[in-house]
Amino acid sequence: MTSSPDPTDDIRRPPASAASAAAASVADQGVAALTNVAVVIVAARQSTADDFASFAVVYTVFALLLGLTGAYVGQPLALRRGGESALHRHCRASVAFTLYASGALGAVLAAATVALPGGIAAGLAALGAVLPVVLTQEALRYAFAVLRAPHLALACDVLRGAVALPLLVAQPYGTGPARMVLVWGLSALPALALAGLLLIRRTRGARGARGGVGARALLDPRHLGRRFAVEFGVGNAGSQVAVVGLGVLADPLAVGALRGASTLFGPMNVLFNAATGFGPPLLGRHGGPHRQARAAGLVGGALAAVAVALALALSLLPDATGREILGDTWELAVELLPATGSQYAAMALGTCGLLTLRLLSPRATLPLQVVFSAFSVCCLLLGYGIGGITGAAWGLAFGSAAKAAAVWARIALELRTVVRS
Image (cartoon, rainbow, N blue to C red; front, top):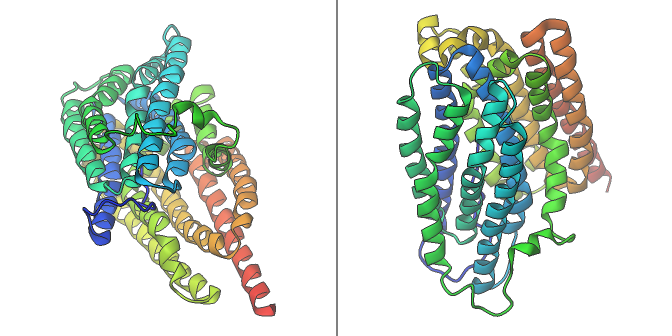
């Protein structure tokens, strides 16, 4: 569910070559993404279908908050420029802000839901308790990327997976969502402690430097995180909020099935993260706009083919094997594989299209995100109204396909403009 940014700042520290830093960054993205996949799979295996549905709603809320943290804190931090001491102070300030803000938000979330009945409410209360742990670790991962030390983020993420997965596996079958969320969240404490110590050691002396930067700086109206948070909200959060609303107000089993099906496509998320992280600089080396668009289209087509092949392979799994992976949720998730595979194929084309459009016309991406995020939400809800859980999955697929088509249509328009000029 988390992705590490690429090192972008010029810190005068010699240790790692560009190649080894890039390799460590890619490895960290892979470890973090696959750990998230494994967490959901283990939770599905250890839970009844109803309990996993509640867990899936809570996990989707966490995914929203995680994305918001990356947008508001992580992305502006990754864009910071300046000398080594200034970057050290910004890293510390960003981590401190995340700790304070997530602690306050977690306390409100826990207080608002702890006394409410039901598995979703109990899970949200548990999420509030562990929110400072899981979100602060995410901020630390961005800090290590800015410090050109992705190998430190990789070490902490490996430790997190090594602690979390055995603890989750050790939970008895039928474990409720609240306990599952607590075990998952608190298992990140060793990794958080290690990351905090490494950051303090790496940025020693930053606190006393001149021109200190405090956590309050992130509340400045000019902070770039406000814009990035808005872009995240209109571009990514809409459909997830709709899924959460579907689980709370209508059918939690729908959320469990959608989460289970999308978890099986976890490797695709690793590929998408790699394309997003390394695509722009690589495309920039392909000469003119037409060559860039052609290269992005080829990559998008290849990723779409991988998604279709993965959907076909998963649909051929014996039911016994599927239940070994997702437990009771398999029976619901297997029916969604064609729709989810189609959605990921469309997302592959849309993701590569957006990367191209950012190079051709950066201002054109936000309007497309706004319009088609709202359209995807409408498709999700309309699909659920017509065909239940399966209809919701096909609604998401149709929304993703429409967005990809619109993005590539805009690219074609931009390319025609280039030719005329």
